[in-house]
Image 1 (cartoon, rainbow, N blue to C red):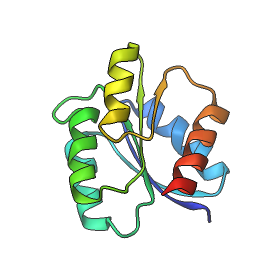
Image 2 (cartoon, rainbow, N blue to C red):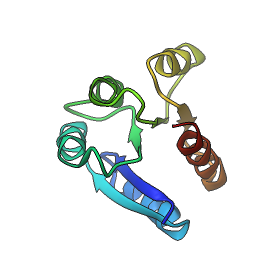
Image 3 (cartoon, rainbow, N blue to C red):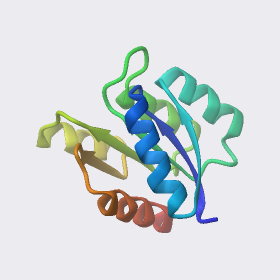
Image 4 (cartoon, helix red, strand yellow):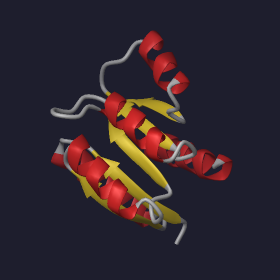
Length: 123
C-alpha cells in the first residue's frame, strides 16, 4: 500500500471517481461527504491519514476552512484542493495557506496521481 488518503467532497460521483482512481493505484481511501465529517474523521484518525484531497466548495465547512483546521492539527499534512471555479488569485492564496496543490476540475487522473505522489514525497 502506498498510503492512506482521506477524500472529502459533497458530490457522490466525485467521491466515487477519486476512490476508484486511488484504490486502483494502491492507496487506502476513506471518504466523507462534507468538511465537518472530514475534520472529525481526521481528528479521530490523524496518525493514519497521509494526505487529504478536498473539494473547495462544500456546504457547512468549505475546503478552505477545512484546510486551515487540518493545518492547525498537523502543519505538515499534505492537502490537495479540487475546485470547478477558481482564478489564479484564489489558487495562489490556497497554496500560501498550505495547500500542496490546487487542481481545477475537470482534471486528468494522471494529474491527480502526480500531485499526490509529489505531496507524499515532500511530507
